[in-house]
Length: 367
Image (cartoon, rainbow, N blue to C red; front, side, top):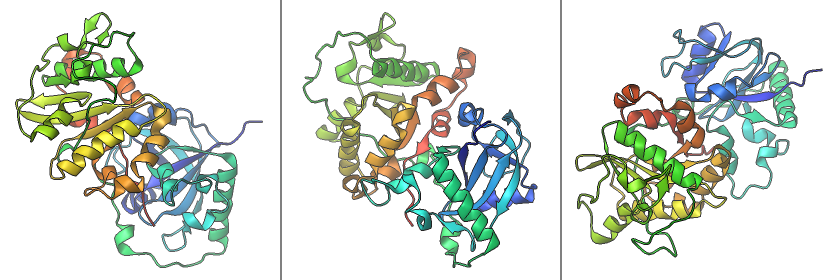
């Protein structure tokens, strides 16, 4: 007998209304989620969650395999990775089940490092939930449909819109020197996954026609027989835009993309269990240059998503203005490896915004 799986399906009030208007027969996800969507099978349940008000608003049963389709349904995005569905239960915002009402039943609320850490589970969909959690959510939604309870809804929260990760809206990036590495020191060990991702980002920026910069302490690293410093369009100096301390922080960022004297994107790469070093570097620059606007990305393995977003929402980083979670987006390794075109002619026509569209917000909802 095939086991049913349970998957998170996020909606804003607008996308939920558009979903219902289109007949509630097709649910869609972003292109970068294609591999995950392909894992969803007929018979699985989609747990429909209304962002902003943080409530479970419905349950849909999947009736088809994944397919790609760009037929217009939603106005905010295409969501081309699609599944045919049949609604099992549908609630209104007022009768929807508040997620915290199930806090004693769901594993996502157990052993939290801080009160709102559960929100990391609701930063993207589809996300697979434990069967026990899925069953509890389905039962709660069905019960709410049979015996509806009206709860007031704050219109401001109902009209919540996830912040678009656009270049002009993303903040700043920071990386001081690594502890134990002197500036200019050579590292001659075998290339790590960090080095390979660094090389990928540098080459991508170069092929897009941008100038690139690699952290000073990484310039002698070699990947596939070529020093990172020899990648085309590599800068040997950076424009003097900041005070001396800030300038040193910027010079130790893992990867920078530049257009003339403007930094158009900055990347810190993490691939080990701890992510504190990168976050501390970012927070340094945010604290020193709060008005600086540079697209900022923390690049890490997909299985570090929860760790990265949980840590970036620690109180110490949330006290910054702007908060670190507001100015830093998460870029999973798979988004780069699976979505960067192989054809140089295609890459040449890409814009830095392409990376912003692959990234994910690090903000956690508070209710």
